[in-house]
Image (cartoon, rainbow, N blue to C red; front, top):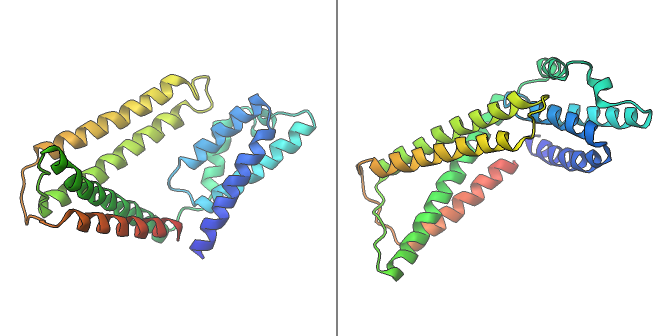
Length: 227
């Protein structure tokens, strides 16, 4: 059932992207603010959210043909209108949320393993020695990456949502702030990982072992995301 929903969600998003081209610039800006406000609320069920966004889009397109605007559809306070919609939309099932989190973590481990394998292959060609991989330190590093990435995403979404339905929405400063948050989180992760002492069992595998494990985990993670 969830797999079928993923296909329907993808179809709804593609149709949404196509139909938005019919909106006037003012209507497009207001609708995209509404769309971002709903899509960046991670509590909501994605399928139902995309359905309501599609209904709103059709309503605006029909109203536009009658000479009306998105403001006529959303009323004087679009943010309040969005909050009313959010209150009525169902929440994402815990099983789906857990599957999403697991999929991201599996992909993350796959990327780390793939980079490690390629590093072990390439660095010796330049006379450099690849750093040893230690099980305990690796797990702590992965957990830190997951925590810092979650915090960064939360703050980026918070910045985007705060400026929606205002003149500042879609401003360069808004995206610069989001980029700065991401950069700070990344530097914090690298710095802590560099200072973290090695502890645990060394993983002395050949480079191709890491590559194979990485590719395998990436495939599993992508299948979990699409399931």
